[in-house]
Image (cartoon, rainbow, N blue to C red; front, side):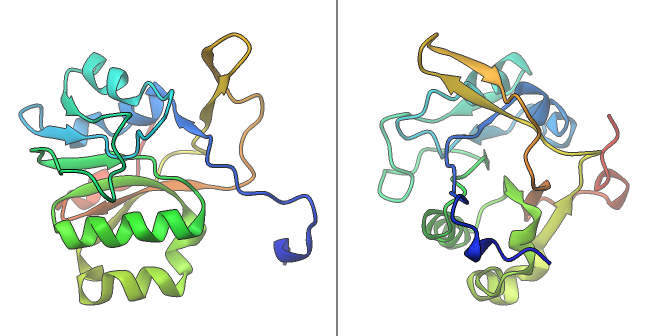
Length: 178
């Protein structure tokens, strides 16, 4: 087993952005009449909102708003790729559980085994579903020199899944096919 706490070069990178294909993989699970809140856009060059619009969905979000302290917009489902850093991620999860509305978030699958997931969700953990993609989810990075999004040059060292809350997704849709 790898003990990453002993690895001097291991860093948490919060600068992984959602590729359009990541959202396209689950767009069939989202009714077109529902408003999506892309909540993790603070100071982000992410094109996530643009991708949802291209996929034919209504979306709200703001790159100037911190979802932990902003006025919550009118929405039906929060769909986002939250920061990977544990303190931010747990605060976001707590906020989403407090709002108690449906959500789908991209998360490193290892998070599912943590104590904080059980603590944050408590009895509401029974409302969680995991949608498993076929293969690894790959991300985009912002190229500061070219001022554009580019696909990451290599696949991440971790597997991600779509963690869903109060979505009532039929079992046959929990394992995605490309």
